[in-house]
Image (cartoon, rainbow, N blue to C red):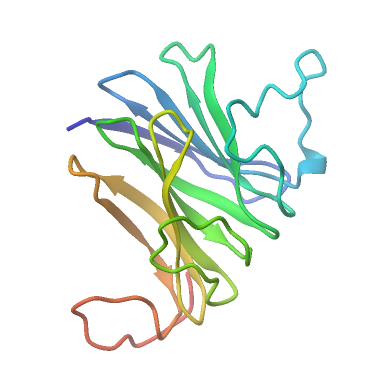
Length: 193
């Protein structure tokens, strides 16, 4: 099983970005997921336009802002892939994990009705804000799965981990009375924190 070192920088402003990174201690590769400011406020260096989207599954900003996932080589000098992750509204990334095979697991929140879903547990936005979980293969060329995680209220995921068997463990908050549960009696409800 691969050991991952994680680092995060918190930010509350929509004119900045929240960044989560994970480094594979086995391969030395870096993964990043970002919550982006509105694209009109993000400026690329003029000497290297377009350099932030490489080998993308989605090369187009889909809504007001999208999350994006980037994989760097071990020295941090080259992007191996970089892609937008989002739909027609607001999408942000909160956390990322990497398994021993190099697959990236991303979680965050979305208000997009058309957020990309593949092999989904839940393919429909259920409330005003749903969490999502997306798994990319190691080369970033395929979504292995991507699903909403939510109910009739609001959800936000703030942590994710992956084990050696490829299982994802996600944590967050919900105000949905119909949130997906297994082997658990009723939910009491409450505000999303």
